Length: 388
Image 1 (cartoon, one colour):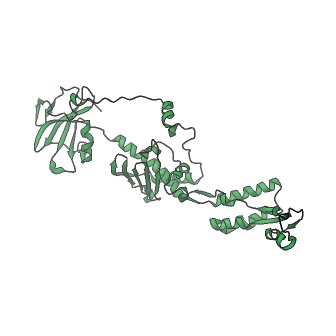
Image 2 (spheres, rainbow, N blue to C red):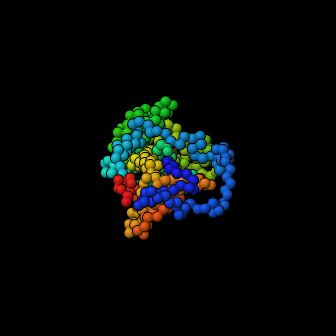
Image 3 (tube, rainbow, N blue to C red):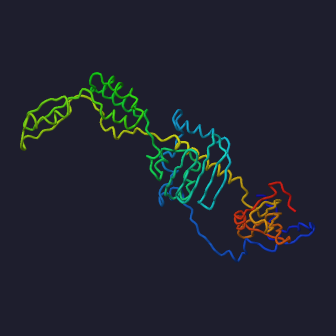
């Protein structure tokens, strides 16, 4: 901000009598006797703060995010969004502290993105779906701080979804293929594979069109077995070999007929191959639309911050401001210079206010800037209009 005048003696000229200097009649920044409150603060190092409150996220050893690996779904989603975001228009529907509604329209591909925030919550919505994040932390009351300045980290962010990570996951046939091939290769390497295992797995499972569906694929895996051999063993010392588990399980009842505590029978597998614990396999990936929206959210926050940084933060000399929401009030303020309070250093805009059909010298302090913005203040000098 360029300071055109300093100190309480600054004066300004009447817009209708340029040769006349008049001191402002009102300073809304307050008089010195109104500033008696004293606040004491203690500066802490990052280490001291961590000892008191726990280590902030950006200081933790675990990396917060990584760049997408080329060729992956995330890399494709990132490229897709970058193309869509080549053009855009930002509309701020609401901005009240951490309560916001930001909308980006005019993107390529008919895409639309909206961010809605309230304490500890962020809703990312648009053409690629809606995702509600919630995270309670020292730095997340404003959830824009959670993703501000970072790379998208979908794998971590999915755990912060209110509806759970599973809502953005989808079946990944490629992962299941790799898991099956790895287990077969491990059995062959360890000498546990029956003859023809690789061929049987390929023909019965990997080449099947049922692998395109998760439930049918798991059914194929669960039912597969090759070269199975079982042995029934009784605590009395007798036993028998079988080609099926059901035969081994019924051996005591139908053949051995041992009774009492001296005839405890157990069944164990002695040969063959089956897929164990397949229900615990990780065969899912994050959905493409969720990946897209994660990249969109990071971009949207950066665009919002850039737009806010470009806005003036106080009245500017040589500019005239009007009330757009209540034009009937005929309020207008022409800023001629900026001075500062001699004690607290707050800025004060000196100029002329047109109110009730009369021009009068006036001064507005920093506390007046935000209220005027909220009632629809417009800088007509920027719009190219000439103030009378």
